[in-house]
Image (cartoon, rainbow, N blue to C red; front, side, top):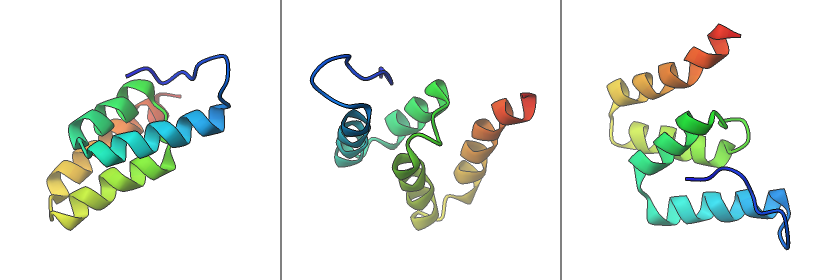
Length: 79
C-alpha cells in the first residue's frame, strides 16, 4: 500500500484519515500490520497502530502482539 498522499485535491491530514478509516473498515489485520511495518509510520498513524494492538489484546493473542511491537521497535533501536 502506498503511504504517500496524492499531490493535488487532498491534504495530507485528509489522506491519512481516509487511509486509516478504509483500512480499519476492511479490518484486514495483516494488511494494516504490513502497511505500518513496511512504511515505518506508526507515529503518523496512531489510530491504525492502536487498532492492531487492540485487536491482538481483544483476541488474547499476546505472542502476536509482542512480535508486532518488537518489529516496530527494531528500526528505532538502530538509530
